[in-house]
Image 1 (cartoon, chains in turn blue, red):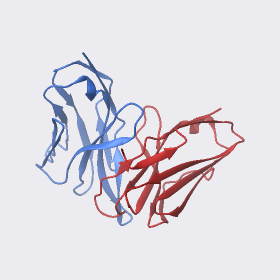
Image 2 (cartoon, chains in turn brown, blue):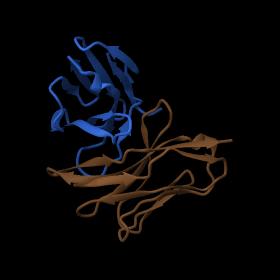
Image 3 (cartoon, chains in turn blue, red):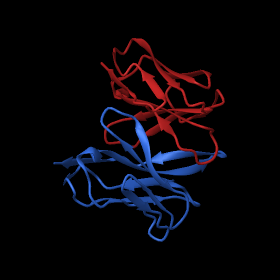
Image 4 (tube, chains in turn blue, orange):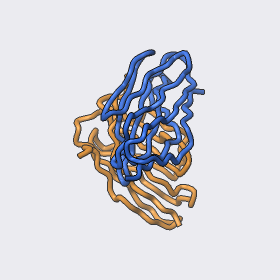
Length: 114
Length: 114
């Protein structure tokens, strides 16, 4: 079935380091791809999304490009901050029973140290 | 402010108790969702309501009973739960059920079943 695989955490970086969190997917058809972020004690927030191949989603310095040839949607940021410490979830939409729903990866916890 | 609130934020209950989780959205959305977030597992979609009608039940045990009296409120009634039901329960809403809509999440209720 449709699924998302993201790199196991936790990831620990120093402030201003480069971040990559890998995400690959398996899907029939052409899903839309998302990154959600969950800050401590809060619910999930949409960080960015891409709806078709070669689209690049970006927000708050984060970027991810929809790569159909490698079925990937890796999250990157050039210089992380302490405030980026959170859990990051890759997700895709699947069509089931005539409607769409989100399928999430397990999440990757990022800790940024000053 | 997320626009989606959940109460209580924390709940401890015994296996014979009956309790309810509440979710309220102030965004004028028509679709609402319950998710279960367990440690080291992907988010699991439990129930979906669209215009107050339940449109999805992902094989959730009957000890979880949802209720959606109107488009702004969603409840999850809990009865004779098991310790493995301990998790973070997240509510989300979106403008409509079909199509690729951004889902807005509440902060969750941390449930512990003793």
